[in-house]
Length: 93
Image 1: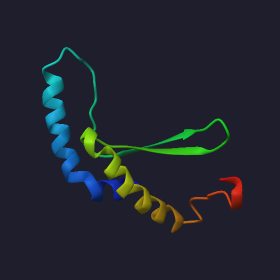
Image 2: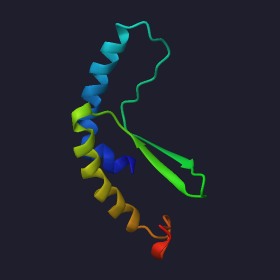
Image 3: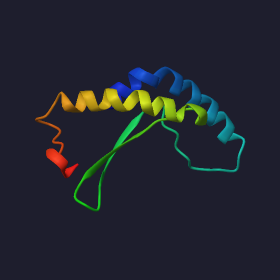
Image 4: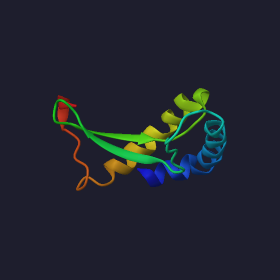
């Protein structure tokens, strides 16, 4: 997942992180870590699902279009490895 997101928006994200760090340096905010690369976080859901969260930095107006581009690519990659990723069968989704 990290690889796919990095390929899609990695270069632009690194540029935005640089700008964001400069802006943060001018504020009284301390100890805030801004990662240069996309990050995948797994979280256990209430109903025994595992949520995969991908964090990346984009301009607010680009958030929707970027997400719309990423989701089909991420799902295709996950579906290509059924031995690693098990989606529920049938209507249990």
